[in-house]
Every structure is written in C-alpha cells, then in structure tokens.
Image (tube, rainbow, N blue to C red; front, side, top):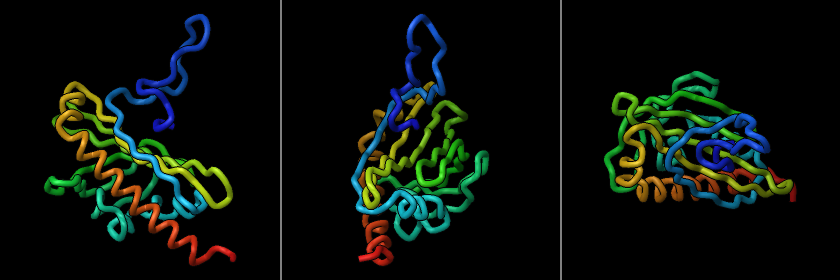
Length: 175
C-alpha cells in the first residue's frame, strides 16, 4: 500500500535484490485519522464514487466506477482554490482496504497518485490514510505551491469520512 510504503518503493533486501512492488516517486502529503467503524463501513463510502458529493469536500462532484483502468470524472476542490475538473485513472483497489487513482496534468509533467487506505485495528475501529504523492518533472515545484492546501483538504476529507462512517455504523451496529 502506497500510504505505508517509503516514497519510491521498498529498498532491496540483502545482496542487491530487486525492489518488490515499487510505488510512485514524489512528494507525499498524507493525513491519517482514527475511525470508530469497521473497514467495510468506511469502504462502502469510498467505493460509492457517485456518493462522494454527499460527504467529500475535496471531490464534491464525482462519477465513475472502481475498476482497474476505469476513469473517474472528478471535481478537485482544495481549500482556497477554485474547483478544477480532473480525470483520474483507477490504478489499484482492494475491497475494505484501499483505492489508488492517478491524475496527470501539464502534459504529464505532473503525476498525482491519490489514495485512500483503510487499516482495520479491531472489530469496530480503523485508521484511514488519505493522501497524494505528487511526482513527475514538475512535481516537487507543484507540491511546494499546493502542498499545504492539499493537507488541509485531506484533513477535511478524513474528518468528513470519519463523521459519515461513524454515523452510519452507529445506525446499524448492535448495542
């Protein structure tokens, strides 16, 4: 999972072996939050891309399906910036665990890997990591310009996801 992996992928072990499942290179911006709900409750919200507009301040408009290679049509709304339409390609997903999608801009000079990763700690508690890895030829420069806005947006997104998941779980949980 990219959120738990060093930027650029894992280092080879021992005598010069090859890296395994190298992740994207670039500047990582991430926010993590504890959620008092099972991973599958959180995943149901993440997997429902069309429903993001009801809770997600970073992607207030979203269309598409979560299948590898599919395109998501999103509106990216970072704090203090005008919302921008973006097209993202689903790179990877694992039910109840993760969604990774990539956005390319400026003719491919900037590549952003966006992710939501869910780690279930106990039956009714999880940690959610929302983040972006900004890479490409101009990635470091872009990260310096918008990094703090991305962090604020990811924090807002995580807080909204936490609130929605905990509310949903409280409504259906036994006890």
